[in-house]
Image 1 (cartoon, rainbow, N blue to C red):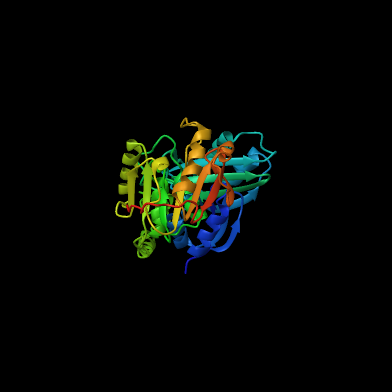
Image 2: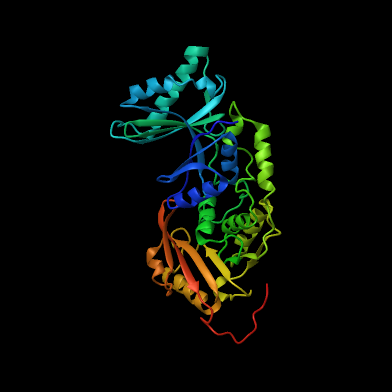
Length: 389
């Protein structure tokens, strides 16, 4: 029987509770929500499963040591005392990421990374008379050094590249949304495949792809070429394949429509390419349509989920644009729950509809709100029969 140990899943601001719920459903133990992270217990197999399946995790870290430090010298000495040959070969490669939040350390994170690197290299030089290399792009082991006040936690990064790099997105528009944030928005909206879904400004299709993967129960990172743990000395390929295959057995075909609009032909082209890369072309349909000239074309409840331009990278007349969003929703999309994220708080004043929820989030470096508008039946009477897509 495998041994359980503590792990830490990092995430984006505002998605901590969503990630904790994901971990609970997946089977994690002793879940504890932190600031942009959730800690939990699991074994090696669960670590593999977490990397494959979690939608709102950025990295899965495995802490290997925690100790008190007061300055750079004590950090060096305690790092050098870790038996690094348990995790890394003397002719292997590694990289260090450091985060420092301590008054005891006046050095920046880059210097702490260099000091930590020296300790690890000197461990191998003293014991084996050779040293591992630094590889910033494809190291055998990624090491995280986190100093909080006088506590230093050293972890191995089991993910490798950030988990937002799903492996399906090769083409983006000018302002693409992070895949982890996109999945978080879908989960926060409550969408699980039980309603039709529309992204009316779909760009390169990220929200559509994440929504379809949720509806189909496809593991978030099934398309990734590799994970960090695959280079670890204790990697168990048979166990990984077993977990990989068991997750795929849960996949189901979405029953309801998942659609994307965009008025730009280039955006639709990019979306189609990314959707095809994710093997979701059978489940997602995209159309070159201007949302402001559209109307609801399916019967029954509809979830609208989108990431409109904020006026930062894509230049728009903010007042007119956001007023058009509100006008289109209330006149053309009855029986709809509409969600969108924006970093432009002033823009929300021009939508002209009352929000039923506002959730604070971060979109990259921008403070944002994820807002919900409930458009009820009877908002507008239609004389014409609705067309079907």
